[in-house]
Each structure stands twice: as structure tokens, then as C-alpha cells.
Length: 135
Length: 321
Image (cartoon, rainbow over all chains, first blue to last red; front, side, top):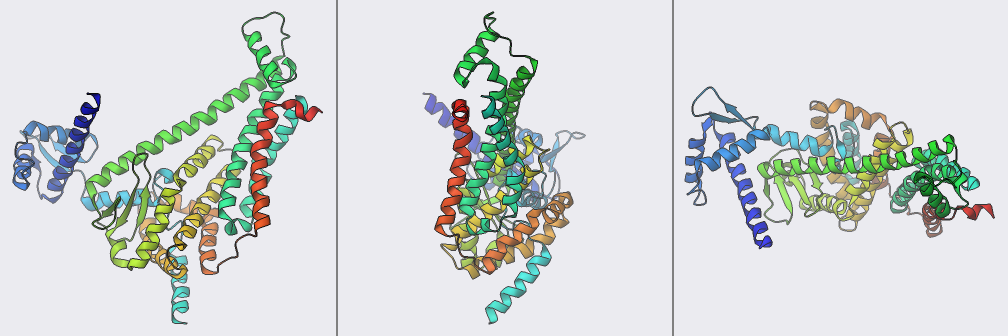
């Protein structure tokens, strides 16, 4: 019984995660702010999974994303309209900086394939490698 | 008991300052990275143990002739037994310092572990929004970015390797294999736990300059370990080419981003930068691995550093004979 509950909970969380991703994709690709209703319609148009999606579910997902700082809410209009807090590219760059250890806590992600090689060092290495190859 | 505490204190000082300093300058470490990493762990563990142990044993010395009887006497003292002789304020101070220091080390480790776990969870969450699973490789995510990057996110349940689109387009399949072999050996050998332990050690003892040295040294050594593992699958030339391509593309971008200045300066100015080229040096001009007797000697030192403080703590009277 407990196992089953765990399973159900897992699927709920997993599908919420998928929804978060779809919502973010729509917001990133949209030129203007969207309401929860817009998003629901777009999600329903996207695939069969979202057919019976309730607006309240979309609002839940939006609230979660807002709490994570990924989504901004315009409160001046009714209904509220939502935008992505920054572009997909900016978030990707942020992730990479985090991973490459330029963020404050470098140990958070063990991402050190380049391990502190400077650009100059890399250039001279490239030259060495080229001579090795041509020799 | 007193003699033991003096010996442990001497050992603690030796392991806190001259030994790490010498080891961080030693040239043989790049020829035997496995043994060197083990030795660094023994120095940190043995150092911590003897630091706490010396204060503990000295504090308990007036209460009994060995640790067990002294601890029992100490307990009777706390519970108010009038037969136990009061050991004096200095000894009590040493005892409480030992206890506090032990707690401090454990708490710092726990805090570092908690912080790392939280940061990784946040990183994974963003990855779920921004990356796509690789079509060809299991447990691999692809990020949509031109910069060639590969890294791994260790996890308790599942670890993932992250590759950027730039890596897949700018590197040949063999070079990609080299990068992935390097990254997955970080995951397989759980290097993240090593880094966690030494980061916590560095945070717990920020006033000890050698704790920074040990963190930097271990960071470089695990790169060498991962290189060696990758070399089992790909040629030296391929691995070097992959490293250089990734480094050349990543270096300007990384230093151009906000907030990167301080940590980059740290990398260049400190031994980190210098030792990092040592990692490349050994790939460019291969070094003979350390001879077997010498490796045995290093291992013997490692075991001795671990066993010595432990045995002395359990049986402090060994030195009195």
C-alpha cells in the first residue's frame, strides 16, 4: 500500500516536472506574456497528454516556477500574465558557469575537465600539438 | 598518558604544517597519483585524529592511566562521585576543546554535504528544463550551447554526464570518447566525495594554510587519475587534443562572465594553476610510473599515519613502556 502511494506520488511529481518543462518552453518561445488560459490551450494543442489539463494545474505549475525564480508574474492585469524571467540561453550560460566552477562554490559540480587552463596556455598547447601532428 | 599526548601533539603539528607543504611540492606525486591521493587522505585524517587525540589524552591524564579507566573516572566526576580527584581547570579546558573541535569538524562536514546536495538538486532541476537526453548514450544529457563542455553531476541514486552541443560538433568521435571516459571515471571513482571531504576540511580550518594546499593538490590529482583511466581507452594524442579544444573554447568565455574574476585569479595565482599545467605536462611528456618499492613505501607511510594515532588513542600506555 505504502509502496503504491510512493509510486503514485512519483508519477505525480514526474508529470509535474514534465509540465514545468513544457510551460517553460512555451514561455521562452513566446514573444509576449501569456495567461494561464493561453498556456493551457497551447499545451492542449501540443499533445494528447494535456487534453484534460485543468487551468488550476497550470496555475500550480506557474506558482512553482515563480517560486523558483524562473517565471515573472504581471499582477497589474486580470487575469495575471506570465513571462520567463530570463532567456533560455542565459539560463544555459548560468548552468555552464556553475558547472565550470566560476560560481562561488566550485565543488558543487565536479566539472573540471579543463581544470584551470588559461587561454594562452591552451593556444601554446595547440601549437605544440600541431607540430607533433605534422612531424 | 602524558607522554602519549605529547607525541600525538607533535604528530599533529607535523601533519598540519611541514608534511603537507613538502608533499605539495613533491615531484613524484604525478607519477603515482593513486598513492598520492591516499597519502593526502591519511595526512588529513591522521592529523585531525592526533589533534583531537592529544588534547583528549592530556585532559584525561590526571583521571587514569589508560583511556578506558580515565573515561570511566571522568563520567563519575560528572555524575558527582566525591571519590574522584578534581583534575584541575587546565585539564578540563583541554578536554572541552577536544570535544568542541571534534563537533566542529563533524558539523562542518555535514554542512558542506548538505549545501552540495542542495546545489546539485537545483542544478538538476534546471537541467531538466534546459537539456535533452542523448539519443545514443545512456545517462547522458545534451545542453544546447556552442561552447564545448562536458561535466558530470554525481548523485546518490543516479549520476548523469552532461555534454554540450558544441562538444558534439567540435570534437571528433574519438575525442568525445576521451572526454566521456575522463568524466565517467570521476563518477565511478566517486571523486566528488573526496572533494567534499577536503572542502569541508578547508572550511573547518581556514586559518591553516595547508588545508587549502591539500584541497588544490587533491583537485589536480583526481584530474590525473581520470586522465589515466581515459588513456586505457584512447590514445594520449586524442586526449590531449580533446583537452586543448575544450580549454581553448572555454577559457575566454569563463573569464568573461560576471563574478568569475575572483575565482579565476585564485586559480592562476595559487599553486592550482601551476599544478594544472603539470597535469598537461605529464600527458605531453609521459613520465615513468613510480617504481614498485617506492610505491610500497608511500603506502606503508599511509597506513602508518592512520594506524599510529588510532592505536595510541586506544592504548596510550604503549609509549610508557
